[in-house]
Amino acid sequence: MSETIRVGMADYKICRSPQKISTLGLGSCLGVVLYDESSGICGMAHVMLPDSTRIPSQQKNRFKFMDTCLQDMYEELTIKNKVPASKLKAKIAGGAKMFAHRSSNSMLNVGAQNVEKAKEMLSGWRIPIRAEDTGDRYGRTITFDPSKSELHIKTVGVGESII
Image 1: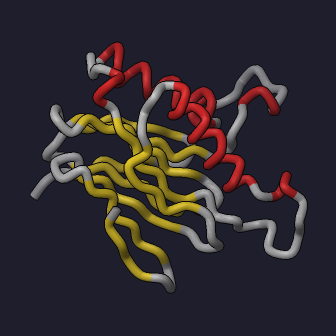
Image 2 (image 1 turned 90 degrees about the vertical axis):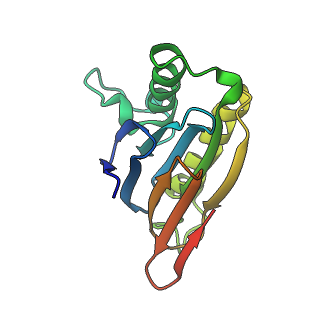
């Protein structure tokens, strides 16, 4: 049985097959997996907010924000672990509309903003998104198996799926 690495909220981790990697409780947060099928290395981020420049603080957790967390994870994979950027692929899940059920205020729909920012960054790096399960109004728990390039998604009241 392989070890499963846990990624907390506002964090990212790197793993290699046969390890798996998982994060719990993605509501409006977005889970982003970057992986290389040939080497079996991957990274998973559990990101809370889209843009660090909107929060005026010098003591920010870089992993809380899509712009800084994905940049750090991308650099760790491509520079430190020497994965060619051209081999990276992505899968994303989460980004639910948890707080804006009765409001049209887009500022409350953090989930959609997280998805939009992730797609913008991945497009800029020319990383294709191979699959996604985003939006809607429910939370998710995800586990990625780099040996199969499969993202297993559990949702309360909805069921399980693999993308």
